[in-house]
Amino acid sequence: MGISEMSCEIAKILNSIALEYDNSDVKVIAKQASLEIDVAGTIGPFEAGREADMKLWVARELAVTGIVKFREEDSITPAALNKIHWRETLQGGMQIVQLPQFFYPKLRNLLSELREQSRNEPTKIQEYQKAIHLSQDIITCRLKKIVNLASAPAQTNNILGNLTKEEQALYKISRNAVDEWRKNILSI
Image 1: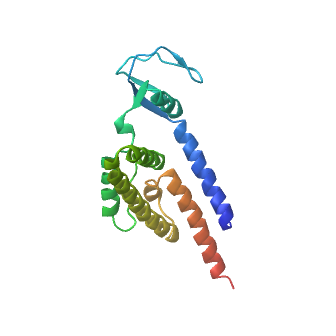
Image 2: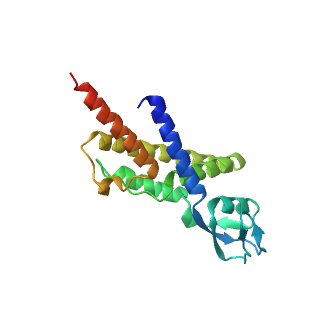
Image 3: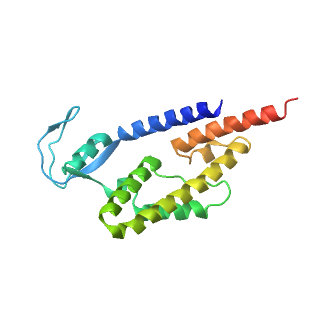
């Protein structure tokens, strides 16, 4: 598999994960009372302060209109990012910390929110820059571990189970590339 094929494969996998994330079920809290709303089916009515279940893409639209808000525990906050960074960089060798489900899409959401806030509030610039730095550290640390795993003997599901779906795809492609390289480098 050439570089362009690997790029296409990774792009397809990442798009598939993003679609899965957008269609995942989330719990939101109604900010105000509202009658039923027809969005690809009927949702509601909403009672202010009550939780409701819906697809993420629907929740985003309703959040923009001010009808609902996301629960903090379902997203990645700067404090949670700090904790993940601390746990990930503390682990040595091939130990990989399990990340929350849909970590990378949630991380992109956090960074996007912080970037937007920093445009309106100059005091948020430092928080945004710190989140970028922590994110890059986490990704670099995990990437090194994935490359090490891909070039080592076959791994158990126990170790690979802590990888996110995006990382599992990267591991699989890297593993195949390493195996192909080994096969070709030793052929006579």
